[in-house]
Length: 67
Length: 136
Image (tube, rainbow over all chains, first blue to last red; front, side):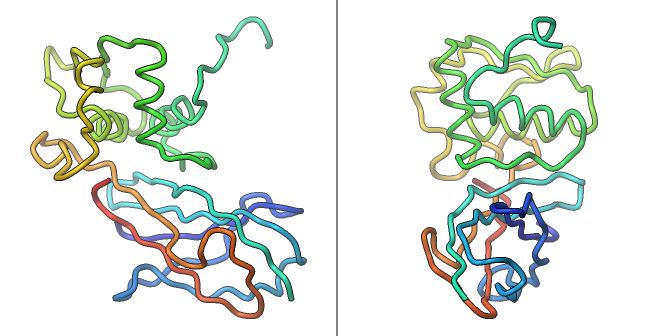
């Protein structure tokens, strides 16, 4: 795996990229400002890429944004 | 055009994953586990053999997808073949060292969101983390 991106879906967000992870001891991490989207329920997925051009999506998780 | 194309078989993620391998694009959104879906697909339709032709943009992705779910294929005449699929499904190929380790095919790597947790409520600036493994 050479990179991991994060995507959000829900409300007016249709598979919107919200960040690219940086590799750390704790996995691929990024910071996301949840205030960039309206309050509501969304699904979040990670997408991993490899050097050969392949990619794989994670199972979606459900999150609720409440600011 | 409705009526001309064959219907998409369930689980739909199987065709979507294979389409993504063929066209070389990122697999579509799915709420399920790709390997488990493929095993369910093969069981549901009583598939006895799988033959993969080296065509499309990412044929290795399709091979690793099946190898992760049902074990090592054999190469024959330029195609990749899995025989006795239903017997293979009796063994949980996805546990322990993956078949890909010894298949000589590129692993079907996976990723999983680690944080936030499923069902979490988030606010402000939040750390998001995922893993990316080379093996299922």
